[in-house]
Each structure stands twice: as C-alpha cells, then as structure tokens.
Length: 458
Ligand code: LM2
Ligand code: CA
Image (cartoon, rainbow, N blue to C red; front, side, top):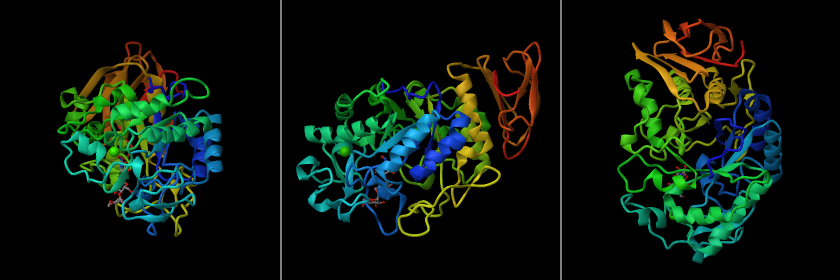
C-alpha cells in the first residue's frame, strides 16, 4: 500500500526543483512523456513566506494550504496536472506539514494570507496556538521525542496528534487528490510520529481512478541515530540517503560498485527504498550534506545517475537543478519573486541558468532502460580495470567505463541481434551473437555509458 506510483509501470520520477507550473506542463509534453518518465516531483505548491532575498527555502515555510506559490496559481497547477496526465506523466507534490513558518516572522504569504509566527496565528488555514507544540529547539537527535515534538530550525511545529490538525492536513492532501495528483513527498517525515502520519493517511480518499496515493517519506537515516527508515516502511517508500553516499563514492572508486547496497548498514529493503544520487538539500550542503555527487562534477555525476538507473534497487528519482553559487540562492530570476522561464537550446540542453540534468543523454536515456528491465535481476556481473557491466535478466545490458574507454567481449545475457546504444541514440550499435556474447566498445570520456534493451530502437 502507498507504493504504487500509478504510472503504468514506469520506474523513474524527476524533481523539477523550483520550476514554474507552466514550464513543467511544457516539459511533460515535449520531453518527459517521450523518454518514459513516470512523473514529476514538484516544489511545494501551497502558500509560503516571501523573503526579500527570495531563497529557495522560503517554500519550506508554509502560511496556508492555498495553492498559490512562487511556481504559479491554482489554475496553472491544475493545467499542469491535466496536461502532464494527458501524456502519461503524473505529479507528486512535496508537502510540508511538519511545521508552519519560522519564529520571528510575520507579514503576508504568497497567496495573500496574513500570518504571525510568534503568535502562532495562521488565519489562512486557520491554525492557532493550540495546534502547535510548545517551543523547544531540536538539539539532540538521539532523543526521538525531541526530534518529533521540538522545533526544526525554529519552524513552528504542528501537533499532528491533534484531530483538528490531522483534519486540516488531510483536507489539503484530499484537495490535491481531487485535482489529479498521484502522490506525495512528505517533507521532514522524520520529525513526525509514524502513527500520526498513518492517522492522516487514513483520512485520505482513494485516487479518482482508484488506489491509494503514492507516498515517499523524507527520513534522513545514516545509521547512528535511533530513528530508522524501517519505522516508516508501512507508510510507503522512505528516502535512502545511505545509497546516495555509496553511489557517489563508488563512481570515484569503481571497486566499490559491486557493493552499493549495504543491508549491514541498515539500508531499507528494495521494495520501500526511495533512491537518488543527490537532492535539493544535500546538493548545496543542507539537510545532512556530506560528500554528495552533483551536477558540478558532470562526468562522475552522469556515471552515478546512470548506475542508479541501471541497478535493481529501490524506486528512483532524478534531480534537475538550477545553477547556484551560494547555498541559499533561489532559482534563476530577473529580480523579485518571479522565476525565469526554462528555455531549450538547439542541442536539447536548457538555458537561462537551468541545468536540466534529466536531459543529459546518459541520464534521460537510461529511464527507458530502467522501464524495460523492471522486475529482472542483475546477472553476468563484470567488474575489473575500472570497467563495470551487467545484464538485467534477458531484457537489458549495461556497461560503464571510468576512464571513458572500454573494448571487451562480454556475455550480455540477451538474444542474438543488433541493438542500439540508448545513450548515443543509435549512433553506435552492439551486435549480440548466438551465444549471447558481444563486443562492447565505449569511447566517450564525457558519457562513458552503454545500455541496450530488448524491444528498444534498432
Ligand atoms: C526538509 N526536510 O526535512 C527540507 O528538505 C529542507 O529543505 C527544509 O529546510 C527542512 N526540512 C524544513 O522544511 C530548508 C532549509 C533551511 C531553512 C528551512 C525553512 O534547509 O535552511 O531554514 O528550509 O525555510 C531557514 C534558515 C534557518 C531559519 C529557518 C526559520 O536557513 O536559519 O532558522 O529558515 O526561519 C532560524
Ligand atoms: Ca514535529
């Protein structure tokens, strides 16, 4: 339950971080549908604070559940959901329900509602003081009571034990369900009691087409704290941050690529692990930070994401970023709160400061690979001399070379035939002989990846 993404068996979503709803609708139509993406994680859709400096994180300080944000109006949100849906792409909303805006702030939110955090006054919902935990700051992550009931960086902490709070949050999620979204990323789930999240889920409708919405819970568990991802697996998928660390390290040291899933370290079972190379927090040193691979190291980042998608672990999310030079910097803007359009260059890359990792060939084209091999296991694993390769059942074969060059005959596990390399979009091909062997050649230091599938282009 809560793990069906409702996208016809597709296997990957993309986080279009801080994109406007109008641009997401266009991207569904012109790119995501064609590449086999299941859906899009969108930035928080509800009313949030506005800061003069317009940092990205203002959207993690809710003012009400009205659907008017920096990304657009409710009408634009609905248009996006419908247009994406029409081409087979679903929307997953980042919902911030652990807290409202931070202490010390007051004014007017992005939908025009007044608020005063110090008075716990959020008339746009409405929430008042009785709906919040009394103030204490989270300091000791060794104490689950403190992590769940105290304030995360001074953010006014809602009491999800309270029936009225549960009702209001459920009303917000039910509204999104009515509008046609397929699921939710639960921000700061680690800071809420699993039983309270469950009580909110029980108040939710089925999707209009039937079935429960998909949920993935943001729980940063790197071992070493009492709160474990496994407390949340009954509620849907759970973010697996240890996998990001492992994958980021392994593309720098290929010897580790055989071992990226480490259950000895407590990693989540594959049926509930929500996996990614980086996210909007740790790519800029927020939310745990650490040694995380990002678009700033493009060659290694491509390898990390290609490996994420080729492997057989978890449900995958691809990050799509904007360029930034300081960790608070908001999305490309021409001043104030407006967000710049995402423009598309002649070569398919993005302009106006948008990075669009999901359009990089060795990332966007691996989505079709993951869809094609879903449900198969890894076989014919080969790891030597900074080269890795494996088959996925008899459906697909993947190879990657750290230094950009590979020239080797390997067992692919596939039926005889000519196959297009998905990454070069058929500019290079692979011929599999009657015994399943093929001469594998990689010769591109920038996109050192090869992937072929049964039933793909030829
Ligand atoms: C998350 N997951 O659990 C998000 O992924 C993360 O992006 C959010 O933090 C966090 N939880 C709360 O939703 C971000 C950002 C923080 C920022 C908060 C609130 O990483 O730096 O905090 O959003 O906007 C900011 C200031 C902080 C201040 C706080 C409250 O950086 O110094 O605390 O606002 O005013 C006094
Ligand atoms: Ca809390």
